[in-house]
Structures are given as C-alpha cells and as structure tokens.
Length: 391
Ligand SMILES: [Fe+2]
Ligand SMILES: [Fe+2]
Image (cartoon, rainbow, N blue to C red):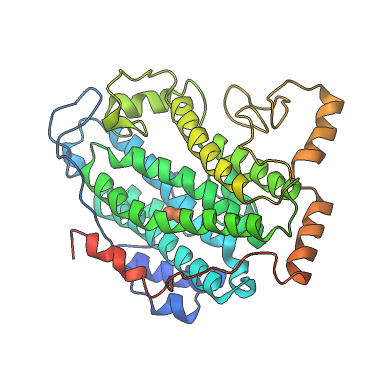
C-alpha cells in the first residue's frame, strides 16, 4: 500500500498492536493471556546454501548480504504471506473455544491458537528486525486484515471454520499444507527464516496430530456418516491443493534459483529441480501424504460404510491448470455443466449437510470418541521450547 505510514517504531510497539488485536477478535482467554510469547529459533542442518544459483556459499544472516533488491522483495513477500495465514487461522477458529466437544479439545484448540499467534509474531519479528521501514508497515498491516472481512491474502484463510468437524479437517489438512510451506522455507538461504521455520515445525506437529486424531475419533465413533465426513475432506483438501500456488509459476522458479524456497524433499532429492513445475511437484507430494493418512482412517470405519479418499487433484480447483473446470471429486473425470452442478451437491457440504452435522453434534454426545490417555496440551506446551537455540 503506497503511502501507508507506520505507527510503530520498535518491536514492542508492535506487541502493543498484537495485544489489542487479541482482545478485539475475542481470543484473550486466561490461558492465552497468561502465555509468554517469544521469538524462538531452532537449529538448521547447514549454514551453506543448499540449492539454486548460490549453492555452496554461506547462508545470509542479514538483508545486506542478500545479493539483489528483487531477492529481498521476494523474501519479504514470502514472510508476509506466511504470517498472514497464521493470524488468519486464529480469526477463523475464534468462535470454537466455547463449544469444544471435551475439555481436552478445548485445551488443544487453545494451544493451537497460542502457537499460531506465536508464528504470526515470529514472522512480524523477522519483518521488523530485518526489513526496515517497509517491514514495519507490513507487520502492522498483518494485524489490520481480517479473515471474517475476506481480507486475508489467500482464499482458504477467509473461509469460516465454525464447527468442530471443520476444525479437525482444517488442522489435519490446511495445517499440513502449512507444514509443507514451512519445510520448503526451512531450507532457505536466508538463515533467520530457516531457523524460524525449524522451530515452528515442531509446534506445527501438534496441530496436525490434533486434527488427524480428531478425525480418527470421529470415524471410530461411527455416528457421523462417512459420506458426510467425505464432503468435509473434499472441501478442505481441494482448497489446500490450491494453496501450493499456480502451475508454471515464475515466482516459484525464481525463489528456487535464488535459494529462498526449496522443494519439500530438497535435501533427499538429488534430481535437478524442474523449475517450471515446482508448485505442482510439491502439491503432488502433499497429495500422496494425505491419501496415506486417509487410507488409515478406513480401517476404523463401520462395516458397510463407503471408503474415504483424498479428492482428485483436479477437483474444485481455483488456482493452477485445473482451475475453474469441472471434474469428478473421486475419479477426476470431466463433467458437463449440469452434471457438475449436481455433483457438487453430492460431493461438497451443502447448507442442509451443515444443518445435519450441527444437529448430530448437538444431540449425539458420542459423536466423537474420547481422547484416551493423552497428556494435557497446555501442560506440555513448554516442552517444545527445549529445542530453541536462542534461550
Ligand atoms: Fe502455524
Ligand atoms: Fe498450525
């Protein structure tokens, strides 16, 4: 936003805005209020640039060492997009704190929210510490956009997450996209970004675990029919495919050449990268991981229930080569206009489906199996800190 004036001079000014934001969106419960937020870094495997044009040179510790302004801009842009998703997810989930299915789940979502806020905090700390005046403006804008006003930067982060089926599907699959993005940035030539990601990935594991185990508990309870669960898988997994970005993306191409963002399997992959198809390469790795997880749910399904699956990579896409076309959710076959309209009603949650879901959640106390033998998420939240290298 040209001409935007920064209200903040220092990071502690930004913390003041962050405290106001928490109160404004209504997530400042006692547990969250009591949490001490910090900027935390984890270890990275190597101080040498791992891929791209500068491979083998020392990673950059500050912006002066980054060779060109274009590269600095690309880095800042990635940090802004990452941070935006973190605050957005808290805004999306803000109404779920009061109606958690069990006390364990309430404490789990509290922890997820705390950690997402800390991720947003971490990105803003990078912006303010390294990116001068424009970094301060961006860190401020990060707390001015709102998911529920449709202002967050990526589509999936403006959608409501207003029931617990959404929450578990979201944390299993949208947070898993998050894991992929963090891992790709962990290999970054900009070392403070890589170290941030290294630590954040440890926190992220809890979110995906909560989601995956929540879905397993739902499948195991056997109250919500599999066809309805499948619709929620279709909704969130198809939008996660989009989060990997366009095909033939030139920004992904340059981010790789410049050493800013690697492939998800970068250190293990000794083949030369196809620079023209990086986003789709990573998207397919994501799809494989998701398909494997869903296959495991199938062993807990009641007999006679249809098997769950990851939607076809072409289904319900709005970004990339399959965008705005009409394909079958399971088989990927092309469908014509009328057939597709009917298909969407059968394969995506409708207003009536949501009503049914909410009725089940309200009236069937056992719609989700108990969380057996798990430790208190808020008692264990501090354990990750032992891996921080800066405290
Ligand atoms: Fe996060
Ligand atoms: Fe997360």
